[in-house]
Length: 524
Ligand code: HXC
Image 1 (cartoon, rainbow, N blue to C red):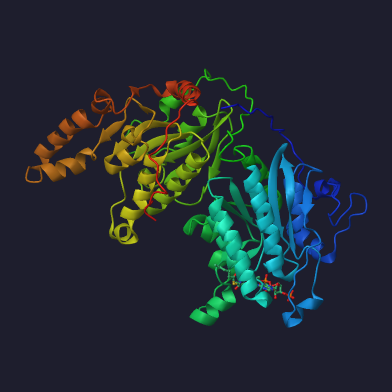
Image 2: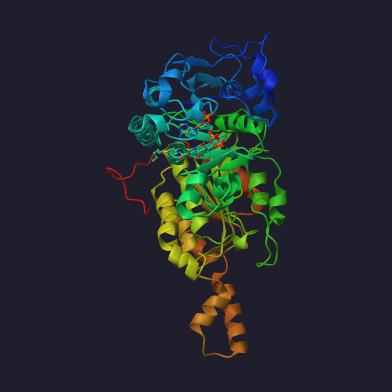
């Protein structure tokens, strides 16, 4: 594969001033004469930008080219013939981010609540088709009340056209949604099919039906925030990949995220030149894992020294905190990180963490991004709620995703790898390419006390204490796995960065294909 090299400027324009300096024929503002309308001024007070400002700030200055700015809706019901606005409330087009192409759409909530009509749906469909044809990501700035009620089934048809393309192009081009206002109905289902959905604090909401309908149907009064605010979707439902404090930060962070992504499944991820040597001293890794096996530590302290400095872009930081997922770079190359987090619930795998990690694995695999897995996991979380909630089905998603993934897979067991979770977390048996264990890691069916309780329940407490020691010596080490070749090497923590750099360089040539099938049947 060809290595594509480009440089990421450290500073790029943010702020309304930058928007004013962006020239565009169709922009509603001009660099010298721009004066916000009262509606715009009201939005600016809350750091909420207009649909066009969002696009202009996301794209490199002067690169946005609008499509279909003059399209109007064709609805004649409910007096709509008198409410025609050029563009029909959606801005669509193409631009560049750090010199790389992108397709975009942006809803204008000030036009009929950013609602979707037959006409503006066709605009979105047009840029989606073009993005897929060329192989370029699609970014949507969502701020919409959903299907335009006045258009009835025409707008439902428009949504179905978009959903179909979201699905067809899933795994072909990266699709990212940013929720920047109250979004309802179809305006949340399209993002739900895209790869990542981000939200903006204080101003964005996502729900299938708004609070008024919810209280009319269920009788329960609920605020927009309670029903579908960033807190709910960022930490409870797992719908959101992350929350940004305002529009400006969201756009800046999105530009950053863009630098990790390949344009399509036919393109390699960009390689960013770095001076961060593979030989950098990472002795700090030797003391990351506490001597006491029960003591917690932050797995980010193991991740950060291994990857290029300050290159971690975390996905879903507030959801299922017992697993850490995100993008990073190693020697400038994009990688995906999946890591059990011993600091939260001892890093146990449960329903939410399994689903979170499975989605990350599948994104990485779809877009040929190597996966680095850090393992410190005591097993799957036992419990009635987990069983009733379908931990079997959800845990199987992660198992399936890792097993199916053909991208380079590097695994580092930092401490515990117990039970089924050992198998799941990118083990050798699931085609891990390089599997390492740090010297004090424990690879076993379960922890010593649990095993002894099961096997020697009739023995006295003293006898059991002896058995625990025996079990720990025999099983709670990486040696039995290493002797069988289940880990390729037991390495000192400070060797990890160098090993991973060497592996990624070698594995860039990896070419594995799964047996032909129409598609698999991942346990949904
Ligand atoms: C037409 C709409 C609209 C819609 C909002 N507006 N949603 N117009 N179709 N879907 C208009 C309002 O009439 C109003 O017009 C303006 O946009 C601003 O709306 P407000 O309600 O004043 O704004 P706000 O208080 O911020 O509330 C935002 C909202 C609310 C929570 C999104 O508007 C809302 O609940 N809308 C309906 C949401 C919904 O149920 N959508 C589902 C559609 S069905 P004026 O002229 O007064 O400024 C759907 C199915 C798709 O999408 C298929 C799914 C699989």
